[in-house]
Image (cartoon, rainbow, N blue to C red; front, top):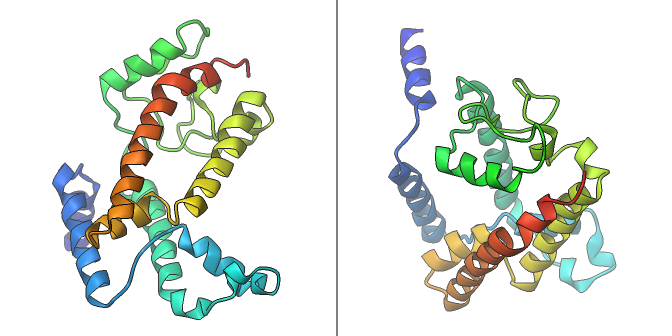
Length: 215
């Protein structure tokens, strides 16, 4: 029992930045060794094919059972994230930097009561999680937010762009940035550079204006 407690203590501590890189690198080594290419967005195609979408579009007409392992990876990632956030995060808070909090508060400086407090930002801002005392202005991913213009743009519009972009680019960020570059594919390098450029433009040009839409 003491051993399990010690393991829990170790896993609950912040890990150095390079630990994630080494873990992903080892995972990619085994995937490439066994001839697999990992990508989360590919699972959407697999799930649609499993549900019979191949009768309506040739895009979904493939041997989806051969991609069953990819579904298990996605399921494991979801389960692992839940375990980490629920049982291995002692304070249930996102440990973002003071500079990030100040930058976010600069965007919301004209909205009364919207200022974030460093050290009190929950991992998943929503009314159903513990310590969800985040200001409504920043509670973006909730049912209440969805039925506002600002929330609709962020949740539905953002989801559409991610889905369209992933299909148009032939893969999402995980597929290109992790699997594609690890496999030395030039199109994946171009895609990743484009992801970063698009992210910077959205963050510094469009997002501040979208966030200021009345909610």
